[in-house]
Length: 265
Image 1 (spheres, helix red, strand yellow):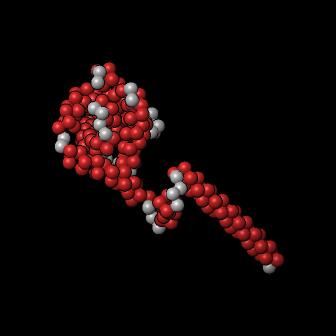
Image 2 (cartoon, rainbow, N blue to C red; image 1 turned 120 degrees about the vertical axis):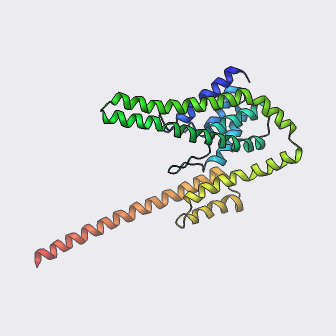
Image 3 (spheres, rainbow, N blue to C red; image 1 turned 180 degrees about the vertical axis):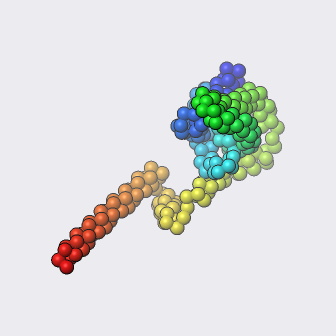
């Protein structure tokens, strides 16, 4: 990998970590987006799409709740896709590599958040003095710290790690590779399970089983299942709106009847 490509990947890492911190949420930090962009930079768009899509299945349930710092999807997706392209890794092996890389990014994220405490105090002091420029500088200082940290992580990992990873992969015994392939086959299910843990409840359990029956028993493809799901959702929405209007009409009629009876009395 050339130094220019490594620099571009580093910039992509910085932009990805800025996605929800500076420019709003554009979903640039998702593996589904980062994978193809890495593929464009390294000249293998197809592999970028495949690896990015596979990683999205795993990391779609990764979310930071409260003060928890989740594994970093940005560095994990970029470096795993880069290693898959440069080192000609199997997609399953690349997916398995993404998790330890994301864990390393998680550690970097904790360190950056700790260091950002300096800018928090800086912003507090500026606010007490009504120094709006100082508040602005403090906010940008924290954002740039994130950018620099993940730029360096991705740049150094891409530039120095590709050959090392390639040699390491060649040294891996066959039974270890087979184990990684088997484990990575379960990882998409793990990602979906994490997401389901957040979303699944008694109210929508029936729809989950309807979707499973359509795909597993009736062999309906993903597009067909999505169309059926959208039709069901639209029907429920229309009935909900209709019932709400009927209830409002009944309440209005009841109020009018009460007024009439009150007037007669």
